[in-house]
Amino acid sequence: MFAEFSRYAAWLAAATLLVLAPTGASAQENPNPLKGVELPGLSNYANPRNSRPLAENGGGEVTLAAKLTDDGKEIEHGLVWRVFRPEPGPDGKLPLVASAQGGTTLFHLEPGSYLVHASFGRAGATKRITIGRDPKTESVVLDAGGLKLDAVLAGGVRIPPKKLRFSIYEAEPGTDGDRALIIPDVSPNTIVRLNSGVYHVVSTYGSVNAVIRSDIRVEAGKLTEATVEHRAAELTLKLVREEGGEAMADTSWSVLTNSGDPIRESVGAFAAMVLSEGDYTIVAKNRDRIYQRDFTVVGGRNQDVEVLATDANAQDPNEGVD
Image (cartoon, rainbow, N blue to C red; front, side):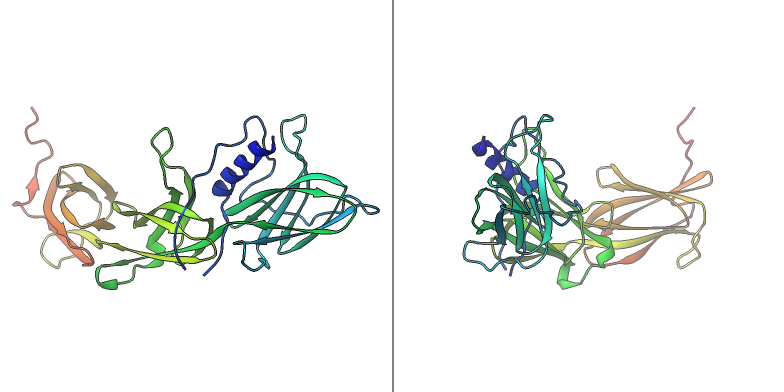
């Protein structure tokens, strides 16, 4: 039973991940979860309560500490502690008997066997402990580190943080071919605590097709800082009657790839977007006329793109329809 729980705890550590440290990169595969047994209340964002003594008189006193590595220092804050009884209750879940948050923590527990889970950000580890009448200290090694992500354009030009997001996935695809999402919507330069191992990171600039994927290794006890380079640009589209003219209102926009696949549609006098480097066709519809222009996006070259509302660019939407 404990061997199965240990495998589940390792899996939980990657789905609930935790870490912090100073520089490197990596991620580990987690075994299958414990079948038939559920850990209650182990939300990644649970609001832990201070533990309440279970045995005021004659109980066992245990001090719980956690470290990133075997020879690392004790973590002083940011931990979430949960103590479970090792036998499932009638509902198939392990009963939660105490919880606390902070750093090194003192618990008073009735003598017996318990499972202790320590989480630190998205990293975590579980350990079985035995409580007797005499005070004791138990240490949990998280085997975790930190990851800080950022992205730039060609030449090191910084990307506005509000337009940049990261998602962190397990490195290896599952049986369905998809990677399990660990953490979505991570802001740049945010330290994410993770168990050591390799992770698949997706960097998204804007909301269309400027996406970079990479595998990054997180090392225990270190902070890995990774910066990816996007080859993309910010564009503002407008339909005008003459070069440098005023944008025409009530315009419907479509952006097509070089192969003719639509990737973005919008309505308005202006259409602002980020596109990855490449060739596109811009289609603007205003009233009963359609205008289009072929355009090449060069990475890092932000610009306004004008589509001229002239007869040379116009097309009747009913053309060729009987």
